[in-house]
Image 1 (spheres, rainbow, N blue to C red):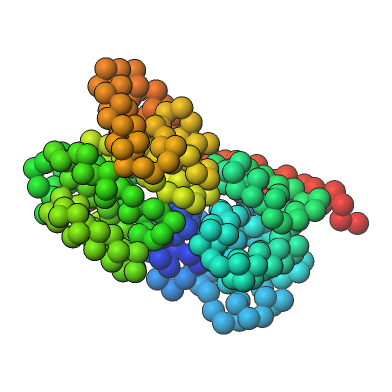
Image 2: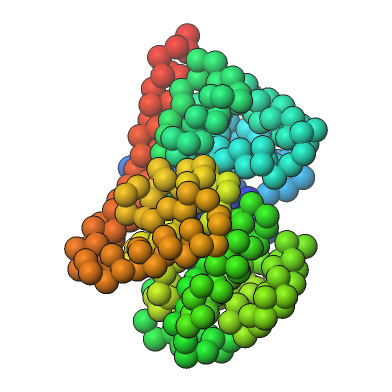
Length: 357
């Protein structure tokens, strides 16, 4: 019999990538049959209500955060985020999931060094480390010292909630459109799509996601200067039903990101059979494989040519290409993801017990 704790503190923001990962992980794990095991979730105060079965919901508090030595001893304490606010006591095996080292791109040298030092301290304290892609694993090995600790690569699970009767979002016209989504920050590189859109006068572009940023304002200024108001839409955060509708009805999904540990939107779009055009940066070629189309640079003419050629290929090979793409995306199921984590838990527990006198 084992007692497991999953740190779900990041579900306090379900609009973030880590928040979405955490809630899907929790929903899938709670439905697994774990005979003899006890499962606790460490939850924020706004953790969504629902049928969590036999799971014990442990709410965060000041004691758990600032006096970890007083926390209950578990067979596994799994932090789904690499910089957790809550830590186990020293007698509990700790698994740390590292999603990315995007701070190496986003932060200046001093801040990046600070994050690296903090992450190294977390690795030093952990019993095992998991990463979400081979690309992230290569970065961890290059920039950090995992020593002899077990290092597991477990791909994310991906799903898109279905809303078959969802209406068209009110900000859209009746024109064909391209779609992209994510927090609108410089690392997402959405701004390069605006000059490319001049090559597609018959299309609109939707850039969905938190647009309360200086980078989003720069994109809006570029849209205005390019006289594409009414064609490029930045609606901000969108509902799940709008997200489903946009994925389902877009002509293609565009994702010119510069820094990704995984790249969840790429697989989300593929699940709905949409052509994906993305960059060759970071983990994106690993996750998209030969089922996505890639920009080698961000010159508008090159980008437009890749999109036009890709759309033409999709039209000529519609059935076979779409079926192959969906089959690829379905490999990234949440059930498979969580099963891989459960296998990791067992391995860590067995190894620890084998060396404990």
